[in-house]
Image (tube, rainbow, N blue to C red):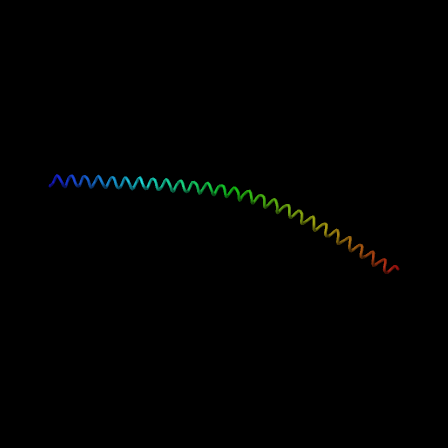
Amino acid sequence: MLAFRRCHAHLTLKRRRHYIESMATSTDKSFEQELQRLERRLDELVVITNQLKEENRSLKHRQDSLIGERATLLQKNEQVRARVEAMIGRLKAMEHGS
């Protein structure tokens, strides 16, 4: 009976080791999979960040262009207004002169 208990205890210990090793291997695989998932996600984020940087650069360039265009249009508008006011002044002068 003592031999049976020793053998049973040895088998139980052996099963525990196997179970622990299986869990460790499973944990290692799980950790490796999670690490790979995080790597892929990080790669995706790098791509997205680069796309956003390029889009931001393009938008800033477009904004600068529009600001310049607006300034030009305001200047032209002011010139047209001055010319129209000058014409109105000449027309009023012609009315009073007639």
